[in-house]
Structure formats: structure tokens, C-alpha cells
Length: 373
Ligand code: UD1
Ligand code: UDP
Image 1: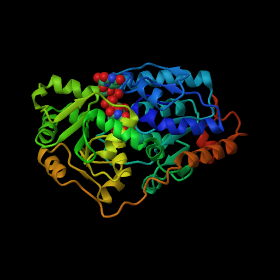
Image 2: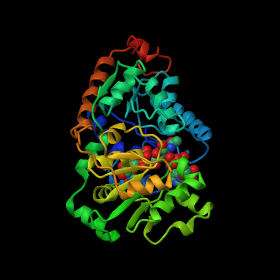
Image 3: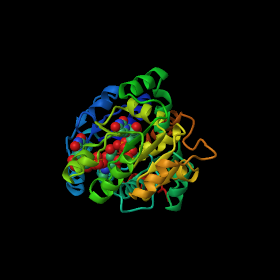
Image 4: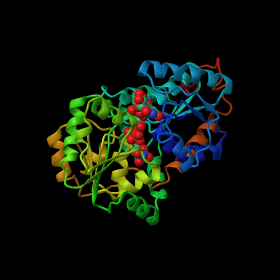
């Protein structure tokens, strides 16, 4: 199940390997629907078209998640899958996991075990709940495995590496990088890449203002591919004047464009989970405009720093970006997809004879397997 930008990107790796071991029915919740947040990734990443589209769109968390829940439950009842596979930590993730759990269909979670230990963020709640409902937990890092163990989850856990790393290191070419930089008129190492879409930054006028002021004070170009909610907030809060000439507020970009912009930035300033990681992949310093991060290795190794929405802390970090002394391979060797396929195949083989596993009315899967704790 997919439904928003980072999920299409992860699915570009995972859907292919899933289809190498079993039939896949792809469901898109429609949480993201603008072409630049959704369709562009189907096209660019050659993702198979969804078999089922719920088209839920935007709403409050409760209404959006509820609409997904009923739509997904109907789809599961119709398709009767052996397994439901969900990605990451968004409302689409939780709705998929909850619907499957209610229908006693086993769940596989890609990017399991991440924790920021900050329950003020909806994503943290989505992560914890999804992990506790899952039978197969694909962890990207050792930290993620340890986080799950600390919560008593040990069975069904596989450290496969990070599927976004697989994609990141196999996507770019020098020619593509050059064409992206030329199109935007910037040179490698000569600009800041900024993104922001978290409610803490986009729904709080003072925080959005602080970010724009710090970025606007830089004597260098800031490329800012803006999520539609950020553009709407700048307008709604009357902050348009703070978008100074050095800030290039542009529409969201495609995946290879985004990667090229990360790889060649002097520094990345973001509240995105994925971008923190991609900056690390390419040894680019990252300044994270959040109070917490689930990608703790990037911070502990000295390549990423948390500045919240504090103007002065952001300004200081942009002036002297973090750069670690070491750069360990936290995220695997670029073969996470292959490891995931092996773990998935093993799971399917082991459960092949399970009576009616994954069918409505079946006994709980975890119980069939003797539980996971
Ligand atoms: C969602 C995820 C977040 C993830 C991000 C990836 C949740 C709670 N949040 O945040 O974890 O990092 O996706 O980008 O699941 N909008 C549009 N066009 C669209 C989609 C949304 O204009 O195609 C606008 C709407 O005004 C909407 C707002 O963006 O209300 C927020 O969209 P939503 O999907 O609720 O959350 P994101 O901020 O995108
Ligand atoms: N990304 C993109 N275009 C953009 C901004 C981001 O393709 O304009 C990519 C980025 O490179 C990363 C992913 O989207 O692969 C991160 O998604 P996002 O920031 O929306 O969500 P998060 O990772 O915070 O959940």
C-alpha cells in the first residue's frame, strides 16, 4: 500500500522485489494527489499503476485515516491477500496496518523500528502502532532493531538495510546532475537546499517566519522546493515579503532532481525524514528544523544537527554546517531490496501451509506463529 511521496519512492525498490517472489496488488490511498507529489513518481520511477485507488485526499487526521481505513478494509476483503505490506510512518501506513490487523491479515512493515521518542509528531504514533501490529518488520538499521527489542518485538524482525539507499546510489548520473544544476543556474556546493512541510513549521506563523528570516539572511542561493501546504501557509500568514530574492521558492521537484539537488548542496536545511538520510548518503551536512529525529545515526555521527525552528540556531548551523569525522555505512550496501525479498520469500514459504492465513475469519496470525514476544 502506498499513498504519498516518500512511499512511492520506497515502493520503486520494494514493489519490484515483491513481484519477483509473489503477485502484488498495489493499493494507493490517494493521500497525495497533486501530480508533483504523486503522479510524477509513478512516471519517473516506473512504478506499476495501482490496481486500487481510494482517492481519499486531504482532511483532518481522523477523517483522512478513517476514510482510508474503510476503503482499505473493503479492498482487503475483496482481494484476500496473504500479506499486507506498508511503508514508513504516515497516516496511510497506519490505516493499512490497522485495517489488515482487524481482518487478521499479517502485516509487513518497511522502515520498521524507527523512533524519535517524540509523540507530538503524528508519525511517531503511526510508527509505534504499525510496528506492534506487524508480523514481519524490515528494519533499515541496527538502531531500529534495538528499538524494537526494547519494546519486546524480536520475532519477525529482519535488518535488511535501507531501501532508499539502494535507490539513491543507483539513480544519478553525472549528466543528470549537471542538467539539474544548469536548469536552476546553480553550481555544485554553491547553494542551500531547503524543504519544510511539518505542521510545527508550516502551521505556526512564528516558526515559518523564523525559518524564512534565517534563509533570507544568507548571502547565497537557497533552492526551496515547497510542499503545497508550505506555499499556502506563506500566503495565509502574509509572509510573502520574507521570500527574499536569494530564496528560490519552486514547485516540488521529481526524485532524480531532488537527489541531484541534495548531492550538490553545500548544506541541506530540512524537516523531512528522507532528506536527512539522503544528505548523509552523499556526505552533505544537514540542518534539521525539528526538535527530534528518527534518523539518529546521522546526528550521532556528526553530519546532522537539530535546530528546531529557532532562527539563530538555524542561522548558526547554516554558517557552520555539521561535518562528521567518520561516515559509517549505517544504511547497508545498497542491497536492501534483495535482503527484503529473501526475508519475504522465507516468510511466505513458512506460512504457505498456515490454514487460511490472511483470510477473513482466520485466527490471529501472530498467534498462529506462537506470538512474537
Ligand atoms: C504527509 C505525512 C508526512 C510525510 C509527508 C510526505 C501524515 C500525518 N503526514 O504530510 O509524514 O512526511 O506526507 O510528503 O501522514 N496537499 C496538497 N496536495 C496534495 C496533498 C496534500 O495540496 O497532493 C496539501 C493539503 O492542503 C493538505 C496538506 O497538504 O491538507 C497536508 O497533506 P497531508 O497528506 O495531510 O500531510 P503532509 O504534510 O503531506
Ligand atoms: N523529494 C522529492 N521532491 C521534492 C522534495 C523531496 O522528490 O520536492 C524526495 C526526497 O528526495 C526524498 C523524499 O522525497 O526521497 C522525502 O519525502 P518527504 O520529505 O515528502 O517525506 P518524509 O521523508 O519527511 O516522510
